[in-house]
Length: 70
Image (cartoon, rainbow, N blue to C red; front, side, top):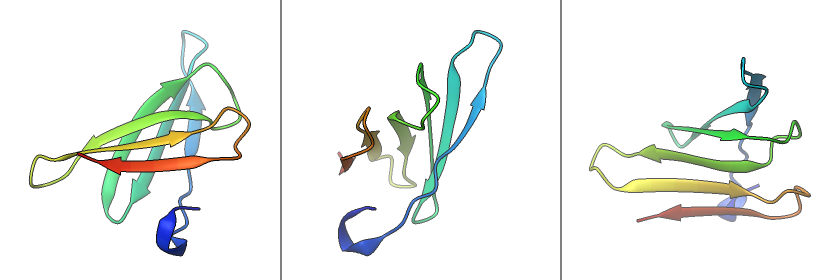
């Protein structure tokens, strides 16, 4: 869950290197990242239409989610 009660579904797919490709959409913004863990934790990044960057960080134990725009 993100601030404001926004829910985010993170999908993951194992790639040929044994890492997990993470994908999520936050308010029509596509975020992508990779992780060594298969639980969906990791860092996903994307770029908004105005060229500002967005970063979603999901704690390893899934207890905390941080969404930043810079």
